[in-house]
Length: 246
Ligand code: ZN
Image (tube, rainbow, N blue to C red; front, side, top):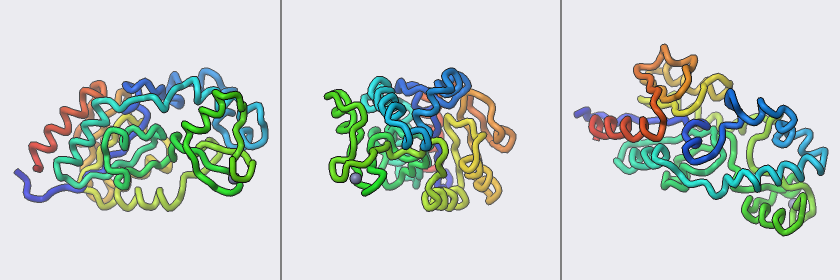
């Protein structure tokens, strides 16, 4: 119908992955609120300082089983949006890698909070897989160290007490300002700097669609707010967008 193909930016948060069995640790009923002590397991200071915190942190990751999680209909809908030929960029607060596993082009996914599928040495910066680190934990190493230099390994996620990568944030901001349609999915939009993305998108003329179970501060600025479960709402929304623009 519309000749102009809009650049679509999709910001995703924990809500898109809950149907894949990944809990929203930071949400209203999240682990970090129920067990404040557990927050130390993902806070950089205690993590680096205390082998016991690291031991518990690795165990938590092993028990959470996040590496075994599968993408759901919400992730697959966004893959369908990209494959329709529309220019799509995914900006995600999630560290689960499920967008890429579902088939989204990796270079078109910006992982603003890093990835929990990889670990990195805190000294020599060597990168290896979380799967390998957890296999070492399962084999009896409570706090697996870097195989190259022996220093502490950490997940490649942004931990509490750390800043988001400024270059990545800049790229995300550029996309937000350039896009014609900004879709925020499963994110409360209450935490800056990520909340600046929809703000700047709207300020520079983009339309905004919010898909989230709870109200967000941006609902009034949105042309459409969808409250249904995301894995049902997103396929329907994508079908409408494809019918309209492709
Ligand atoms: Zn190392």
